[in-house]
Amino acid sequence: MNAQPRRVEHQQTDKGNVPVYTTAVVEQPWASYSREDHATWAALFERQQEILVGRAAREFIDNQRRLRMTPDAIPKFDELNRVLRKATGWELVGVEGLLPELTFFEHLANRRFPVTWWIRRPDQIDYISEPDLFHDLFGHVPLLLNPAFADYMQAYGRGGVKAHGIGADALVNLTRLYWYTVEFGLIQQEDGLRIYGSGIVSSKGESIHCLESTAPNRLGFDLMRIMRTRYRIDTYQKTYFVIGSFEQLMRATEPDFTPYYAQLAAQGSIPAGNVLPGDLVYNRGTGEGWARDGDI
Ligand code: HBI
Ligand code: FE
Image (cartoon, rainbow, N blue to C red; front, side):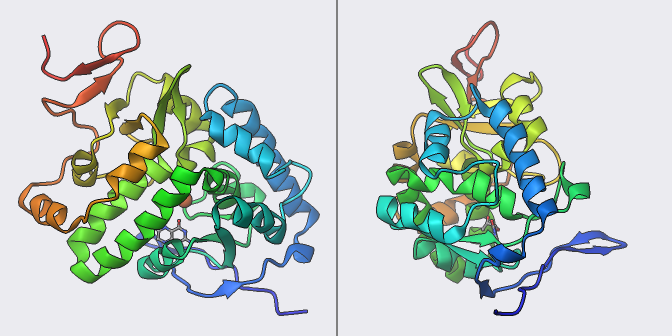
C-alpha cells in the first residue's frame, strides 16, 4: 500500500493566502477517502447538478453522463481514464495541489490533465482558493471528451511551454486566456448563453450570477482583448467572454502567438470591469442581443 500522498494547500500568512506549489504525480488513494469525503462530493455534485440544468452548455451535461459521474461516490481516475483515452486521448494524473505553471503546461501539452487527489473539507464547501478534486473532476473533466475543446487544451499547453520560454509578460497574457475561457467562459448556444468555464460550474453563486446578474459585462470572444484584460481570483468576474463554439477557441490558438505578445507589450492592460469602444457587448439595452459599444 503506497504511502498516503500529501495534501498541499496554500499557507495562511499575515499577508493572506500564499500559494504553495508541488510537482509530484500521485496515485489516487481511492480506498483512503472517508465517508465525509464522499459526502462532500455528493453534496457539491447534487447542488451543482440542480443549478446547471438550463445553465451549463449541453456538452457539459451530456459528457458528465458519458463519464458516468454520480453523487454516489468520488469517481475513480482509472475508470474515467478508460473513457477519456478512448474519446480524445486525454488522461487524468493525480497531483497534490497547485503545480508550477511550466509543469502544468507540460502536462496539458501531453494530454494529461492534473487532478488534485484530495477533496475540500466540509468547512470549505462554499469556497476554496485552490483547485481541489471537485473543481477539477466536476469542472474540468467533462469537456475533455469534446474533441475541439480537447484539442484547444493541448494547444494551450503547448503555447504555455513556448510562452514560458519567452518571458513573464507572455505568461501573464496567456494565463488570462485560460482564465476567461477554460475557467470562466460562456458560450452562445441555440437556447441562449450557457456556461462552460470550470470555475463557474463548480461554484453555486457564480453559476447564477454569470447569466442572470446585470452587473457583469458579457463581451464577444476577442483573443487580444482577453489577453489584455486583468482579473481577480477572489470575487465574481466583472467581465465574461462569450464564444460561439469550441471550434472557435481551437482556431484562435492555431497561429503563433509570438507577434501577439510583442503587440500586447506595447498596449496597456485593461481593468477587469471596463467596456471599451468597439467591444461587442451582449444584452446591451432591451432584451437579448449583441451590439458594438459606441453604436447609436
Ligand atoms: N495547478 N494543479 C493545478 N491546477 C491548475 O488548474 C493550475 C495549476 N497551476 C497553474 C495554473 N493552473 C494556472 O496558472 C493556469 O492558468 C496556467
Ligand atoms: Fe481550474
